[in-house]
Length: 137
Image (cartoon, rainbow, N blue to C red; front, side):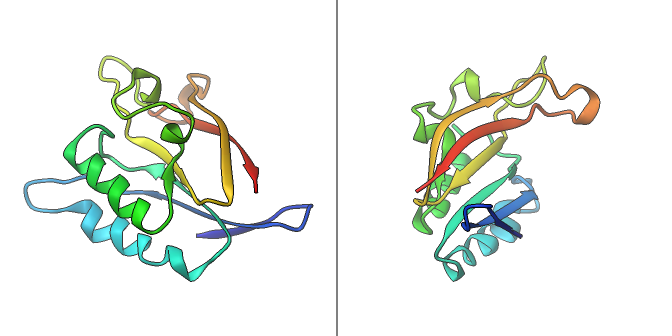
């Protein structure tokens, strides 16, 4: 959880993380992501939540993730520009298995003008970065 102060005087809350998916013995989102979502309302300004969610966006857990985060005012940045769950343009892991498990969510004060994954990270990660262009409203 980080606060960014822009040269124009805007404050942006940036929340990042590496969240657990569901396993036979653990509901990772319920244990880590959803309690974090409950803190979003403590800040009324611009908020960006980004990270490795370890949940495919078109799965039932991905639907639940969007519902819970939507209830606290966060929107999937891919959907904000018309890229729906399951779309190959969301894939953020390298072949042979390309899954879209890395995402960005934004509050209503943050307009997303474009978003894409990038294959130029090299050896920095085993995932491709998700890069969004945003404008503060």
